[in-house]
Image (cartoon, rainbow, N blue to C red; front, side, top):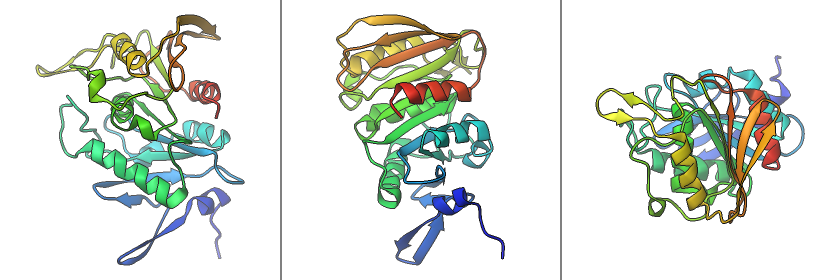
Length: 265
């Protein structure tokens, strides 16, 4: 008999439904109304929490799980890595070109399911994403930030027009965003996608976050290895941080490591 690796076994759970027990975890997606997600637990002991990650454009949860360096970075921090699946490789967030699903409702169902199945709640659930998936993470912060402990995002922000603070839940959690100065896919200033859609400005998105997080402290500039970061302190729930690097459109596991460490995970 072939026995599954411990990480896969640790990820499998049972959810009793009207049709019986449904197993999920590892290579088996966890179904929720409107879609699914994949999850892989850290090895050994009870996980500290979950890092919910939204993949980039034209990717999928299955492909995201193959980015082992990123997945294993979260797992080394004691976090379950949760890869949420978009529809047709894209996300239907506000101002996006595609509209295939009510993403705000779908994310709430994913968070509900993570709580019910795995006991991950607002104290230990983080979000993140890359490119358009990072945009999804930002909109999830806006709509469900009261159910999240923080965010580490890469190379994507809101789309134009940006939301207003009253469009979002109050008191956003701590946020760390990484973006390349030479990013040509999702530039710091954003860019037009066709004639009707426009990616948002990174600096305006971060300014919005500082207002929505009710930050009253100063903005501090710090240098961390190859990163130039601005950190806003005095926020109700935690710092809002923007880190820039010399490079293009990418998500780096070493930056996730630094971000999770700064968030205390």
